[in-house]
Length: 282
Image (cartoon, rainbow, N blue to C red; front, side, top):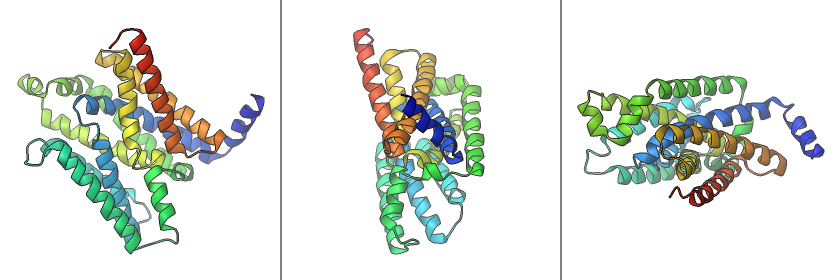
């Protein structure tokens, strides 16, 4: 046990490890807050679709030689999120089909561009890192950490300020409109916040595993609690704990950060399911 704490103390003496933990906890918190709304509105896989869009944007940015891919990735992801949430149910191509088309198309185009216009000697390694977040979380700079902190703060503040409105449009958008709520505006806010979280989370778990950060904490909380407020609080707590444990285990065991965090989320879901079944919650 003492050896484990000695090892952790050694690793935490490096700034990039501390940066990884800070960013990981912030992203996990934000993803869990918006995840509840997405799960209840049956848009769980929008995170998966938008993450693939972000992957395609990163590939385009790499081909264009951009030093900071977020300049292109964030606006593109926000635009696609707005299109999916605001028009996905009002067009001939419904939400689930639109997400599938966008997801597969962006992933394919992104990988194609990275191969045709290769900007590095190890294309497979670059793609693997982007898809699974194996090393990018450990290469964060202090400016990127501050950017993540500011964006995460914006997400949390927006969620707290508009909590009642988000609650209303999550459960009954038509009733919310009837009571005077500007549902279109709050759908736009949700879309922008989701896009921000997706772009940030790519550094943590990669584009293929982002949905896990969105879905698992919310589903875990729903196994035990039924009220929206209780589910929100517990989802945030369990998400942050799983992210922290995932990062610590990955440091000690030498496993990839992203998949380890997802494994922790899966374990938490199974535990919550067992607790909920024993307590007769469902």
